[in-house]
Image (cartoon, rainbow, N blue to C red; front, side):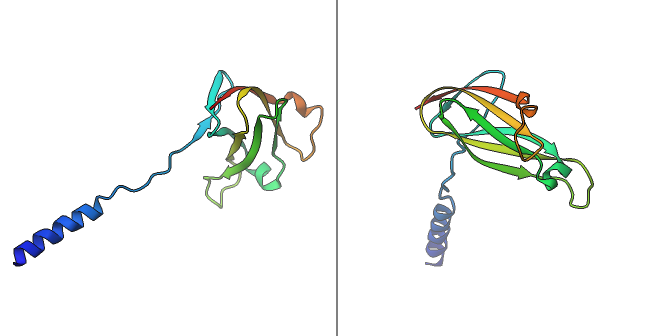
Length: 135
């Protein structure tokens, strides 16, 4: 009787421990400036940028997008600092997250500014991304 109970307990434990966990599918798409990016309407678009660590603490690095069709919206900018806290200098990563709002072809410009205000001098510092949003 003990063997049957032990055997059934092991089987039940094994069945419950092997239960598949729900894994959220990553729907982030890293944009490239040198090609046509074909994305789905449900994707989150990501542009990876960097800036000097001192600029980050001064809050002098800013980003803006220009999309004449209004198909893409800036969602958030995530700062990633993998440097030790006592390190002077270095750089930090920026993940610029965008979301498409409707289907179609888009020419998106990403502007990077080292001041709080946009100026005509900085307007030449833009990267253009070609994006086609599909269902």
